[in-house]
Every structure is written in C-alpha cells, then in structure tokens.
Image (cartoon, rainbow, N blue to C red; front, side):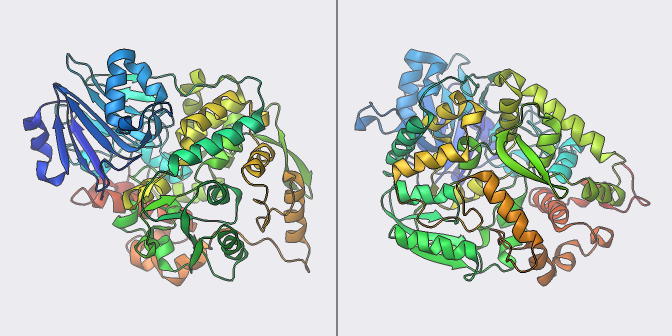
Length: 567
C-alpha cells in the first residue's frame, strides 16, 4: 500500500523485528508504543499528523479535523488531540472529527489505538508474535503471525454474505478492532460515541446546516479536487456544497443513462466529466485491488480501481454511505405485493424480522449458497450458518441500539461491505469521507429511523442548493419512493416500455467477455457454474492470501471438489 500505519506495543528494537524503519516516512517511539507512518501527505491540512511532547507521542492517521472554535495554530490534529487528552482524557476523542485512527502514548501504561466512531478505518492486530502488533494493512500485520490458520467462520461469512462479520478476518490469529473502540497492550475497551439516542428536533434544518458545515471543513483540503460521480443523490450534493471541485469521474458506458445524467450534473456545477467505459479493469481481482479488501470484504466494490492512474487530481471526494447514515439504507420497510413481487412503500415495517432483513440487505442468495456448499468441502448448511452468524452479530451490537430498526442499521454500519471503496481511494489520493463527519453521525444517532429517509435528505439537499434536482436520477423520476418502485415494476413487466437501466456495468457480461474463469479459476473447473459474484469472492480470498503467504493452496483445502477434500 502507498499509505500505512504499523506499530507495536513495545520499543524501537521490538518494532524492527517486524519492519525496517526505512520503510516509513516517520517512526515515533513513546514509552509504550512504537509506530511507523508512511504517507506522502503527512502534515497536510485535514490529513495525517504526528506530534511529540517530551516522552508523549500522538499520531492521527487519515482525515481529521479539530473543533471549529480552535485557532488555526492548532490545525495539527495530533497536537490538538494530545493536549486535549492531557486535560480531558478519553473524552478528547469525542470531539475529534473525521475518518481516522488515533494513537496516543503518554507513558505509565497509558497507550492505545482508537478508531473513529464508525470504524471507517480498519485496525488489524495480533498477539501471536509475543507482543501486540497492529496496523492498517492486514497483510503486513498477518506476516508477523508464525503459523497462520484459516478462520472457518470468517471465510464462510465472506463467501455467503460478502463480508466477515464483527471482528473476524479470514485468519484465526488476526483480528480487527471493533467499531467505536480502542486497543490497549492487553485489552480492548468499548467507547460510547456510537450509541443511538433518538430525540425530537427539526431534522431537515439540522441536517442541512450540518451538511454545509461538513462541506466547509473539507473545502480546506488542498490541490486539485475531484469527485467520483454517479447520477444519484449522494455524490451530487458534494458538487453542490463543496467549492472548487474541478473534475468528476464515472465508470460506465458514455451512452448509458447513468453516465449521461452524471455528465449533465458536472456541467451544471462547472466541473469537467470523464467517463471510463467498463472493461476488464472494472472487475480485475489482482493484488492492486484485492489488497484493499483485506480478505474480509469484496473487492467488487472498488469499481474505480483500474482507472485511478487516469484521474489527475490531488484530493478526491465520494458520497459513500450517505444512503446508510442519512437515508436509512438498512432500515426495514413495509412492502406491498404486486403480481407476486414485493414493492417497498417507503414506510417503516413495524415488526421486522431482523435476521431476514439483514440477509436480504447483504444480498444473501439461498440458491447460490447451496450451490457453493455443494462445490466446497466445509460440510456446513449455509442457511443455518448465516442465520446464526447474523443473530450473533445483532446480539453483539444490541447495547448500542434502542430499537430493532436501529439495531439493523448498527449491524449494517459495523459490517458495511463497501468500505474497501474508501480504503482504496484513500491510498491513492487525499480522500474525504463526508458521511462520517462527526456532526452528521450525531444527526444519524439522534434522528429516529422514521425520519432518516430519502425525503428528509432531499429536503435538506434543496436547502443546500435549490437546483440540486434539476437533473433527476434516471431510475428515480418521482419524489416518492413508492412511485419510483411502481414505475420500475411496470416498466419491467410491460413489453413496449424501456426498463430503467442499472447504475452499474453488468459484471456477468464482463466476467465472460474477459474469460475470468480461465484466467483466475482454471484449476477449479467445478466452481465455474457458480454466480459471478461468488466466483469473485473465491478469487479474492486466494489472491489476498497469496499476497502475504507462500501459497494459499495448502490453507484452502475446501476449494477442492468435495470428493477429494474435507475440512
């Protein structure tokens, strides 16, 4: 990776058992922790920062902003955090804003690594070398494990759901720091920054004001600015609200409806627009892409990965997770049956089945998972396995949510499958993550789920810019969710009406066109009949393990046909 944080709970000599200091731009050694940083934007406003004061050390890795009422001299987030920590303790973390990991070491066994409230930056760790090792690159942390073994449950969850749940990875000895928590030398402490506390207030006005403040913070990011642009709502509000975005990029055929609307949006807000016609780069699961999925989530979500060399910008914006935090992506809706098809109404389900809802939202396919089970050697019934796994994850997050609807969203955020999208971008550019702005997270946690809707979001967006809906998304011509779903259904069922085009390129067509079965699964002919998405997950796992172990084959006997292997 281009940017990395790697550390040990130990001294410089301990650090250098595992990594050479010259691999990093800076190595800081405190009383209890030694940490290395590699980041060519180290010290840039709103970005990775470090600070030392006597023996005390602090690193803030990623995107970070200090409270607005602080003076400009305190723009170094690491300095601000260390000084605030000395007076406020862990409460200092409540006010730090952004998408980051923070490392603080002030001595007397007072040292830790903390996530941002939403765990938008992963921290991997292991105790196998005899001391606690941590870092942002799972492969580099994994290399310190003398004899890694496959975590059966982590692998099964990934294959059937597209994400390893909770703190698991594909390797038993390698774990992830939980959402809203901190890592100490011999313990993990849960924090209380991400807890649902719904109340009544002016949801639209507050959201509009907080969006504008979040955009102002990010307007200070330096260099040429670009945005990954779709025809949807989430990326267009960045164009409307953040001044100085000069370039926009969309992956898709130039003649596709999605791309044409994105182009009009770019013109509306004075940005250039580049469309990248989908080719084998869109799906190609090589190390340059799979490394960012870390063996826990699908590289499929990093659809821009093959095109970043052609994106000539310094700072990149994206609208990832706006639908989750601000529009209720994981909440359960009531549906109506129309000709044996369930149509969402846009209203909350008063009594949802949380396991069933999460299975559907994660995209679980019973038929595909059954086929996968028959072609591998785990000997596990996939239906009962995934149900139990999701039930356990709901139970693990129950203390953070007051209702079933909020529990659904909390589990969804804790296990968001698309996070590699941000991880990859943030390794290529200074990359902002507006949806996890501290004020917007607070709005999310205080707003009841019935008000975290597309309608609320759009009302707030029109207060940011009343022309924001001049060009509507091609698959959402109406303001009402139900009307959009009904029209989608009617178009699909009526012979002489054109259906809405999907927003993303067709992965099955591209997989076949570029002969990925032969290129990546030539030795596994028995899985060639699986759906493309499940085959890509198999390739992800093999590729990720191969990039840091001698060979994945000995670790993955379950990939052989069932008659030849058992696990």
